[in-house]
Length: 171
Image (cartoon, rainbow, N blue to C red; front, side, top):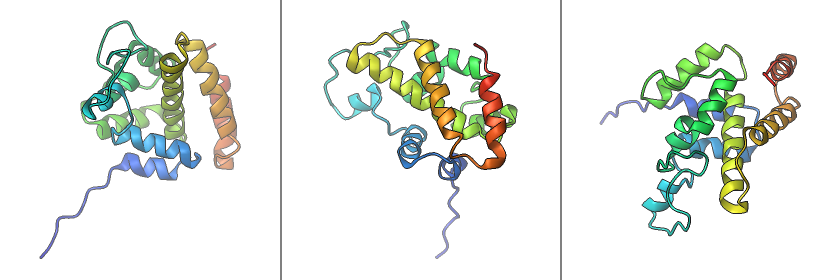
């Protein structure tokens, strides 16, 4: 009996080939596989949400899903505009990510995206658990800090380009 070959998700290859520590790789895997405990996931598990199922980062009252939180939310949309990464080129996450990576034209695309996701999640959690006001400035500070630290782990041939890219981000 023959089986059809399994198509692997290229985004998963980006995770394991990235220079991130395991914690961030697992986080990126959870985002890509839609297994992160966003509010819609908590509802699917029949857990109680005290502050409601809406996104805490934007005033639109949308259900907090992976796609909304990391791609469609007003807060996230501002981040992707700032980073000049376009996620609107389709509906299939893999194809959208491949097109976004091609347009970005830097070898550290995955590291930038995973760092952006991680810091969106940190701002979201600060709002949910510490009742801190979400701010782009706080996201940017965490993002820049984490990417600068990552420059010590990234392949040496990309380090200078990554640091220059960070320096040229708009204020």
